[in-house]
Image (cartoon, rainbow, N blue to C red; front, top):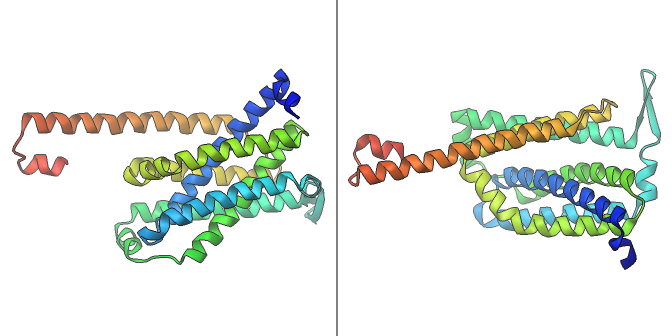
Length: 254
């Protein structure tokens, strides 16, 4: 088995799988962070860690059930002369859920009345975990079927999933803090999830879109928002240096 990991072709496949799993892992973390915001503070970290563990377990379980996963690509139902497989139905249903949930969160972000209501209404941890499991299943199915298209070597898939899981666990807290601390980043993350939900639905209807364009657009948006955050921090430092005793407008700028 060790010989497999020293072959150049296998290493390239592993790197591709690892990058894929990390990207999907970040998607999971963002969605989990948004859902966990509805929980009491003392339950958020536990729910987030449990959600990540469930995501990793689901992907590893699907890798070891390759024959069942691949059977989901066979036609299951026929609607208006179009064949839908089990995977198509999962992509459509999961994408619709992700799209609806992300749009709802965006609407609540821009609605002051609902924003105040959201701060007082707390969701039950069981409901939050159920939603996390549903989206984890969709992301896991998508990533495993894509991985199967790249290689038939199960050890490579498991290694890539475990390596990305380590990154997810190490970065989950930081990603969650940044997304929740900066409203612009949260809005950007929700817009990314809206696009991702739409893309999953499109894949379910056999409309294959290049995800690279979406990831590039979101990376560009992330760079712009990061520059905006750094600029605001720099302006605050200048205000504090020029006006040591804050006046009314300086306090408001903070």
